[in-house]
Image (cartoon, rainbow over all chains, first blue to last red):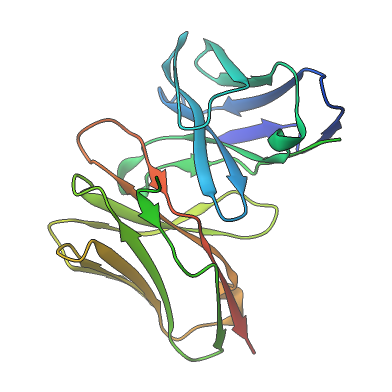
Amino acid sequence: DAGITQSPRHKVTETGTPVTLRCHQTENHRYMYWYRQDPGHGLRLIHYSYGVKDTDKGEVSDGYSVSRSKTEDFLLTLESATSSQTSVYFCAIGPQGRHGYTFGSGTRLTVV
Amino acid sequence: DQQVKQNSPSLSVQEGRISILNCDYTNSMFDYFLWYKKYPAEGPTFLISISSIKDKNEDGRFTVFLNKSAKHLSLHIVPSQPGDSAVYFCAAKVYNAGNMLTFGGGTRLMVKP
């Protein structure tokens, strides 16, 4: 979608390796979020940012860290990937009026 | 403890008929509700929303109903079309208390031609 991109779109990694996912926005939005989507659990908030260098934990933050050194980039790092972190990860910006968030297209991460 | 629940993981409907997707919430502080639609390999996209001061909001074929006393909302799609086949997420927030959205588990809708 215009304004927010995620990279990579797909990644396979081995247990115990570090992984970084990138979210890039061109909307100059203050708030950015990382969610994971798993069957039966919907979308669960991992971490969010309310400005450069300002971040906070979400519902499922264990095993994840984030960084935001520029308004446009929000990085999600798995320090030592585990199989339970196999998921689809979505970045979002918002709120944007009555629409709430705008989501990126997602990153499918498989930890083997 | 899930504050927003969608108890039906899937729903199958015939083309042209009505689809009704349900959502329940437990946090009485929620005062703004949204529905998102998600196609495979894409991010969720906004569909329709409703404020707690209303009990109904309509946008074309999509209508959301809110029953605050029951802490229940529903999304009606009339008539259903095959292109409506997707996963639908219900979400809720406290409008003037931060920007966090809390999502339900999603319902997969399949509209059969």
